[in-house]
Image (cartoon, rainbow, N blue to C red; front, side, top):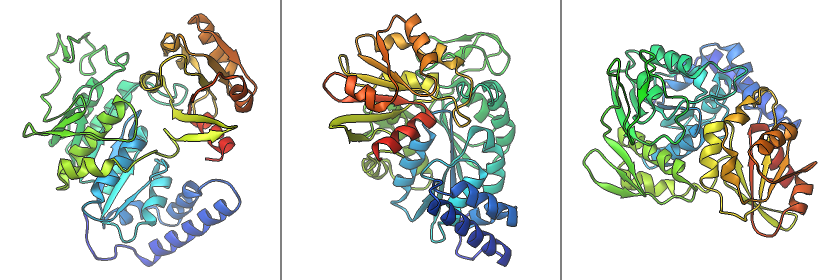
Length: 412
């Protein structure tokens, strides 16, 4: 919990200094931000460093399969109305990266921390959060991530009896089941476009009934809780029934849902919805996502989509046909090496768009598009795809490392 006393021992201060030095050396060598290696070194010198750094902060943890980086940024912007914030804004969301981020926020009052789904329970133990935001759970990185119900069970066990206020999506059965072990939950009707991972009851395994926006299990009675916050069109409804307009520079319904959850989190810390939502308007892009860049005298909008749920949301916000679309897919370690998830994506939603395919696994994607009866061209690289694309702004959709490759290529 926040306080003014210095929680750092001499050993912890040495660990922080060493971690920063290693991170700076990594940046100087052109090996990225250095946050992960810096955090690893710091934790090696003081294994309790994350807990020590968190002692002086009011901490919010944000976890989900999709949207956690953006929501972390929106919450950080909102809480800035109440005091200085430290956050892992670039998405290094495992303990080393989180430690590195907190080490840079000596004057902060709030810590807003994105956490990888698998590490949530452990990071919650270390940081004693005041608030935990749970947005969604769906399949991702099938070669190394647990099945979604196992992740939900891990959350459920890790959050049981937690003192934190849990802000959770009432529309995702897996999230509801996970959050229900916590004694203090604020439910948000944030919606759920991707439902394919939530047709069986996480409580008993029975078939979930999903009439309209509601859901329930006909066998054990597990059902959607009554939300106190809700996304309604372009407004957030608060627990008093007041409607607050959402004005974002970030596109799409998913980001309005992220804003609704962020407003609920901000209210836990006493920031009114109007103030929180007005501050969220400042966010134009998040770690390059949604940026429109100039490349080869063309406008390219960069969009990140890492898994079936993310691709479905992304297809809903791109400009209509005949807008050209470049798709790039890799299968490196950070992406997950299994590309079978491509078959769960409904690529018929791209019908009418000129499609250009690049990336390490462009042939895997080409086979999937062929089966979906889409017209596309396979290209060697981004430059060739841009040259082939017809006039107009180009939508570029890529998974994680492909997105980083694209950012480097366009100088973003």
